[in-house]
Length: 82
Image 1 (cartoon, rainbow, N blue to C red):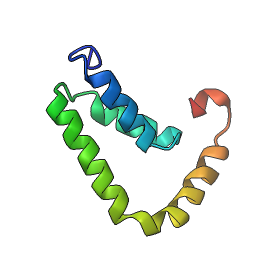
Image 2: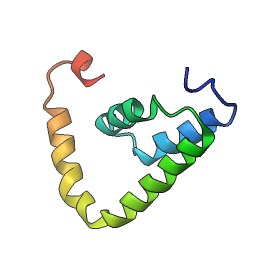
Image 3: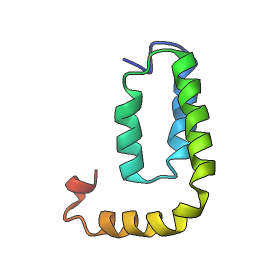
């Protein structure tokens, strides 16, 4: 429903997905968050915020990403990881 609400939103969704760096947890969390965004303005605002937050937490990625990867890799079964 959200993706069809404006012809620009699918491209903005690709940008948001790219910011998740292929991390399943990030994709799930951001996907749920973005599901209520209906306007291009909301999507662009979210992209701006994600960019800002990424810059603020750049030093954290080396600490957090290994923890998330370990947690994800430790999940039992492919259906849980999906």
